Amino acid sequence: MDWKVKEFQALSNDELYSIMKARVDVFVVEQECAYEEIDNYDQAAMHYFLTIDNQIAAYVRILPSKTKYDEISIGRVLVTKSYRGNGYAKLVMEKAIQYVVNEWQEDKIKIQAQEYLHRFYSELGFIQTSTVYLDDNIPHIDMIWGKNQ
View 1 (cartoon, helix red, strand yellow):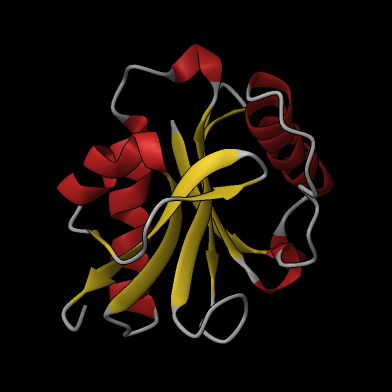
View 2 (tube, helix red, strand yellow):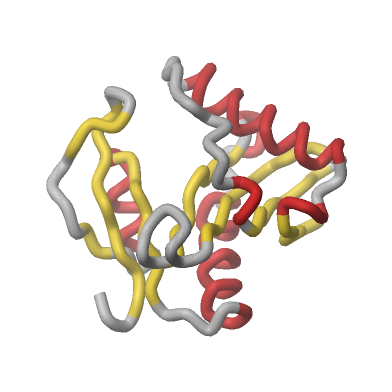
């Protein structure tokens, strides 16, 4: 088990391929949702991920403030199918939040969450800040974490 956090330019070809494959497998294939997965935000992001036996097990993308939103944001949160049920989603989110707080000295994070994950993110301290809306035909909500929500 190996946790990694890397800027886009520091990712190896194999790491980048594995990340993109995991994201497409989860968000495009499993969720049967054709959307622009490669969205030109990856180059500005920090990529925080867990590998087990050289396979992506969990992943998040952390975007600096003023990239996609005014706030720092965490997105593309996933655990690959064969590693689900082990608490890795909570763990990767906790690690990403701590990275933002400790490395970037920031105390506010925005997420665009699939509505069915409201409870999961609430348990991590996120508060819903929008009504439910459709994004790529999937119900979503905006949520904020931080001291000044």
